[in-house]
Length: 173
Image (cartoon, rainbow, N blue to C red; front, side):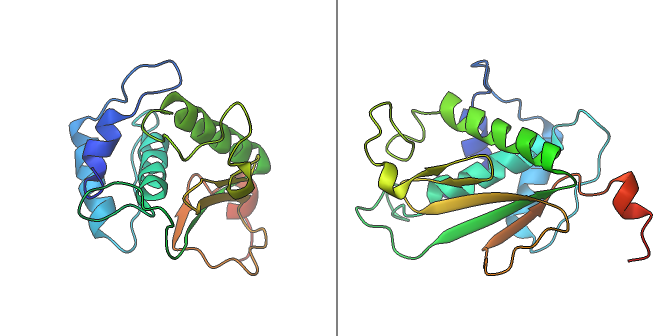
């Protein structure tokens, strides 16, 4: 599971408790995502581009601090893992991060020990806000609207989802 994004994605449930659909094109995209340094996914609406990318982000967060041989969480993960998700507007960022939080909660069993619990224990290492999620293993996801400052952040992964809008595509940049 630690080394197989598509296997991980096939275990995910949506917020309603239904398994995520992993169609043939998702398998193709998954292989491309895992093997490419830079990638553009271009497909019509309702082909689950965003869902696939969010699933990939969740997999990367989940696997941080896991033993490569056993896949089990190590007691004290070394290093950091940070990703930034960009979208065109603040409103889109809010929707994307709500989707991320919903998927994390819908898959609490898979993310056992990484999420905040009802008692608040373990919250010192966990962040859970509209634009920032840090799991107990130290893996982080931040979200920003396109063309906002990210000064000081040094992410391992940058994802752009629907960053083009009428306003930013008519500029002289």
